[in-house]
Image 1 (tube, helix red, strand yellow):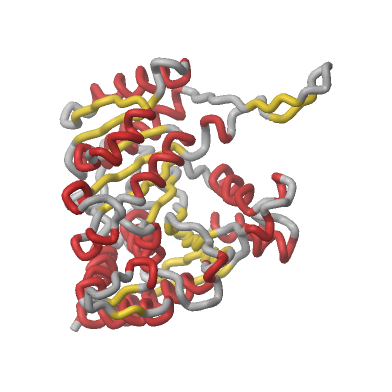
Image 2 (cartoon, helix red, strand yellow):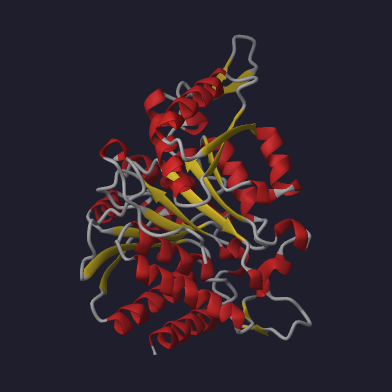
Amino acid sequence: ASGLGGSFSHAAKRALTTRAALASPKEVSKITLLPGDGIGPEITVATVKVLETLAECKGDLSFDFNEALIGGAALDAVDDPFPEETLNSCQSSDSVLLACIGGPKWDGNPRDKRPETGLLAMRKNMGLFANLRPAKVLPQLVDASTLKREIVEGVDIMVVRELTGDVYFGEPKGIDTLEDGERVGYNNMIYKESEIDRIARVAYDVSLKRRKQLCSIDKANVLDVSQLWRDKVTSIGAEFPDVELSHMYVDNAAMQLIRWPKQFDTIVCGNIFGDILSDEASMLVGSLGMLPSASLGEPSSPGVFEPCHGSAPDIAGEDKANPLAMILSAAMMLRYDLARPDEADILEKAVEKVLDSDVRTADIYQEGEGQTMVGCSAMGDAVCSAVKELFA
């Protein structure tokens, strides 16, 4: 369902890439669960149920789950959005499944006491420099998009976003008061060649497994850091002659994603441009509740797999959430971290099977189409049943 292709193989020169953290499948996989805030605990329960059903059906697979704190839940419990104990659990795991963080409860906190700070700390401490976000319009949901069918039908985009550099992490940064009493805020948009190099290689690798078209996003007509980005991405392209590279300014890319999204295959961008464009691309699909993502670092270290949507505090605890993005994130985990591409295929097929049966959560439900609206728990159960049917 997520259109991510099979497992990856690489030349030695391209070691920092998207191959599985495990060279071969383990019988017992250690997974750190980070339910987080809002609807997070509900979609985590549904996803764990699906993974345990998969393990039961498969026979040679089992999971050792360890739940840990992050975000607002961690702030409430230990006054730290990403506690040391959570980092240790993540680093000693084969992979990490994160639900979602944040909510209005913590929005007024100082920056170091906000849930989002925990997310940034996790990315930095675990070396998660590459974020992969597929935006694939499933045929069953083409009419759930806010755009016309002819625009979005067949859209299958992968956004590869750099995660640990750029203006979010650049220094100096801060808010100062000038001599005349006026306050000034500043951040530093900065990239080293090595940071551009490694994300570009991931993007080229992903392109090779897709339609071999890579579009690099920058603002090189204005920003020096973008010129370096363009130069470096272009030079690395010589090592990937099979990939067709193009460049696009970020403002034009934002427009083209809405005007004619089918022109894109794989997109690579820096942290802030990727943050914005990946959210825009995800809405082509019709609901953030359907979109998984992977955050990857060195091949030998665990990745973090999470749905693209937020914590939806307005429906938390009401059994209304859509767990499919987290279930599809678990499929990405199986593919990228656990060296189990066949099992990833089964989860993705199970999700499509449920959608084929016209079972929908509220966010993707369409009135008058003969669909059955269900809650979070029932949707998880439906995927479990579909997994069992695929093994029958």
